[in-house]
Image (tube, rainbow, N blue to C red; front, side, top):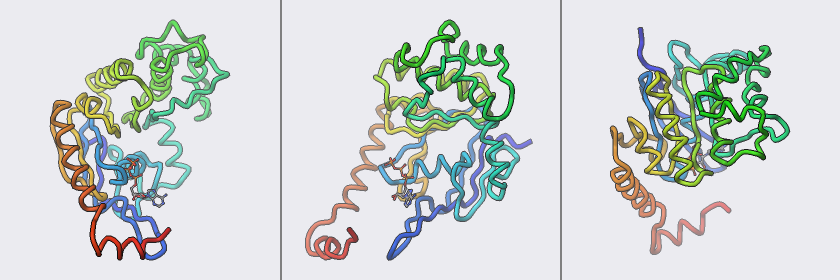
Amino acid sequence: MNESAVRLRSVTRSYGRAGGEVKALDRVDLDIPRSTFTAVMGPSGSGKSTLLHCTAGLDRPTAGQVFLGETELTGLSEKRLTRLRGGRIGFVFQAFNLLPSLTAAQNVALPLRLAGRRPDRAQVLEALEQVGLRERARHRPGELSGGQQQRVALARALVTRPEVLFGDEPTGALDSTTGRGVLGLLRSMVDDGRTVIMVTHDPVAASFADRVLVLADGRIVDELYAPSAERVAARMARADRTVQTSSAPTGAGARARAEVAPC
Ligand SMILES: Nc1ncnc2c1ncn2[C@@H]1O[C@H](COP(=O)(O)OP(=O)(O)OP(=O)(O)O)[C@@H](O)[C@H]1O
């Protein structure tokens, strides 16, 4: 049996632009083992969101293959992809995206309803229990703190018992203490056997991961294993300097390029 939760084979995602194309991902190969926590980092525009979206079946690569377990996502019909996203994959975003008029329990039940299933109350309460909010089931988002709202969003992502949980800056809107609480929850989910893949700009958040992937220009250029926040910060400072140097040229060449740059 293959132990990879996710596999990417030579995945490229290009976007057409007048006068050329942008390769948001450039022949990326990646294996993410089950029950691991991966952080994806890199400078702005390096391809982090595109990697997350292609891996989660929210976007389709221009070339290459994406596998979730044994299922090849590339080539699946939109209908099958939607069904798969509704069950085997969970998402948490920076914005909590909770419906304000619904209670926490009703928000958590939403993915089951959208999948045409009758929400099982025990299943909903179990998801809220996992994030420590069972007693807040009847509260509306406006009655909860930011951290509690993100935990409800996490319970909503967990209710379908997904194989892989994807996070796009899940702690980006939280203060550092509250963010650590959410990261600790993600970590404990991995320790319980789930796979988590998270995009982040925050070295402290990345230090909760087993592995940090560093992207630049659509490629994985480095990997750090079980890194400290300090090591991640030092690596990212180096990446940012490289980007600044290569994207902020000076002198005649820069002026010439600026003159022909599209508006
Ligand atoms: N829909 C699109 N159309 C055209 N170009 C796009 C599109 N989406 C992304 N790109 C380009 O692809 C590259 C990678 O974008 P992506 O959003 O994946 O980067 P990122 O690392 O997540 O950036 P950030 O940290 O700023 O969110 C960028 O050059 C971006 O401009």
